[in-house]
Length: 236
Ligand code: NAD
Ligand code: ZN
Image 1 (spheres, rainbow, N blue to C red):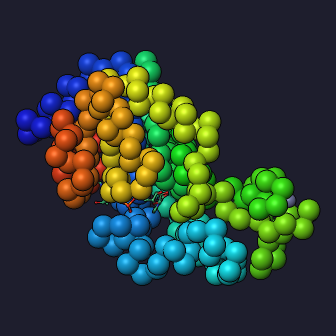
Image 2: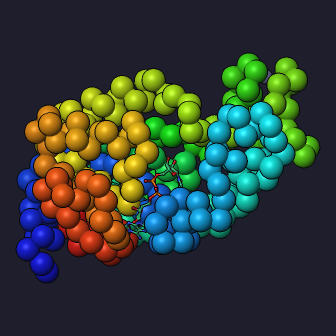
């Protein structure tokens, strides 16, 4: 085991207050494509054409088709060793918060309990007009709410604000943490990425797990290069 892995393991073992920020990279080994990085979805699709309220306003049918395709991919996927390691970390840590940018629900399926979904949940259908949420989609090509409004996926699109309560809890957890573990995020999407420096300014040691270098790699206390599904079980 390398010195970096040992250092990360020690930090996590000694800490009683841990916050974790995950991104699409933790689900990559489950077969769900990331947005950026190798094999990322943005290579084949333009986000501004799909993941914005304007795109949905212009062409809701195409946006729905893209989300139904992603839901299909996610439904076939299983949580991996990285998701499971975080469940173990939660079980042994007195104060633990998992902040995720992922909308796939794999942390829930792995068994994590305290999850803050700062970018929403792809499995939620929400009425654009009245805000009502529905688990099951009515079977029509372009699903509508009983009030007549269009249903949309319950994710946070580019240009939209984050759910206020969830975000406040995420900031609180980041400010209280003595270790902030960042897994599989390009850390380019704000305000979520801002939690990393916020945690560090408030005294947390930052551990980064990623396949590639990110803008936070230089300032992180420990940087671990490699797949989350292999690294996390070694440090937890
Ligand atoms: P991103 O696509 O921008 O970045 C993914 C990062 O993960 C990259 O830095 C990449 O190097 C790293 N990575 C890839 N495979 C990895 C692995 N096996 N182990 C460790 N790291 C790995 O994703 P992001 O930072 O989460 O941000 C973008 C937005 O994309 C988020 O808002 C999120 O809502 C959305 N998104 C979610 C999902 C999902 O729910 N699974 C999938 C794609 C995008
Ligand atoms: Zn409605």
